[in-house]
Image 1 (tube, helix red, strand yellow):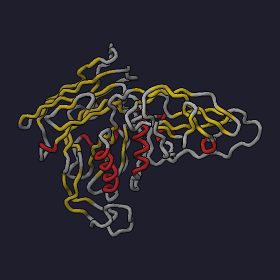
Image 2 (tube, helix red, strand yellow; image 1 turned 30 degrees about the vertical axis):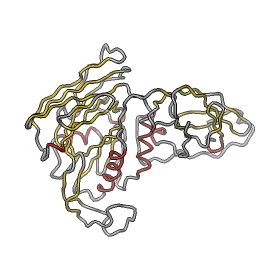
Image 3 (cartoon, rainbow, N blue to C red; image 1 turned 90 degrees about the vertical axis):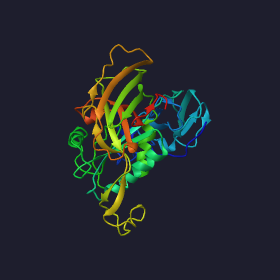
Image 4 (cartoon, rainbow, N blue to C red; image 1 turned 135 degrees about the vertical axis):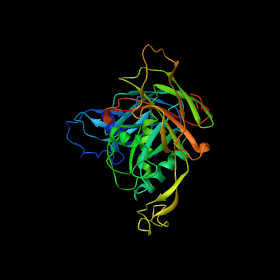
Length: 366
């Protein structure tokens, strides 16, 4: 069993009850510890009680007194009686584990967590950007670094007010409560616009948190491309019922599109930024996975999830379209994802996503 030394609480843990993912929130501050004799019990709480063994999922624990005071930093945590170096646990095997905590002379009741064989879950990052947005290059660089180094992360960009904007962009902006750029949505549910560079660590925290859930379904895509005609079939393998209504969105994106890009970091005033040595504007700036065409309705097509049995495979969408707005078909990709409500970003959620090069196929476990 591997013990992570990383002690940050995942950002989503703090807001998971609302379904909100805020990249700007900070780990919850501990209150002053009540040293009076009134605190006579502690409780251990976990971000998850059932997680997949996928090499990235993790548990993060809190300890609270019976007066609901946080004492995490002063608590020794144990897994099956073995002391842990921190309050973060990344398992190396499947099975059931007993978690306890000891604060001063108080010991918590055991908490049971289960680690299961993983299903194929992927996290979707939707990045709103523009060639005129001088703060956007660094945010885009952060997203690119995640998608390039983590096969479980799928990212695409939605342009506005520039040559890459398509008619669906304003609809998606309204649906996802976007009021400025750069703006990111991670599996949807993140409701804040920010105008400062995106830090990588909070993004990774959010992704680790989301990958610590077993998906309720997995997706496969079969596509064919003949001349400019693209056909695609999306299938779902269902493991658990989906709460509320569910929708399928299928988008066509193009990679490596170049443009002239405004750059607020020119001149070296922000040394950590990779664009400080570039001019303003940047010529031949490379944009990745730019939304070019929507095969479903922009807000998604409703899918039938009635009468499903565990492990059932069902086609949830089939589409045929003439490819438009794509300059290089070899750089065209299909992204499919199943999500929740369309009318309220705070209650929406991406159940799972999948990506494949146009004309190719990808199976459930890939």
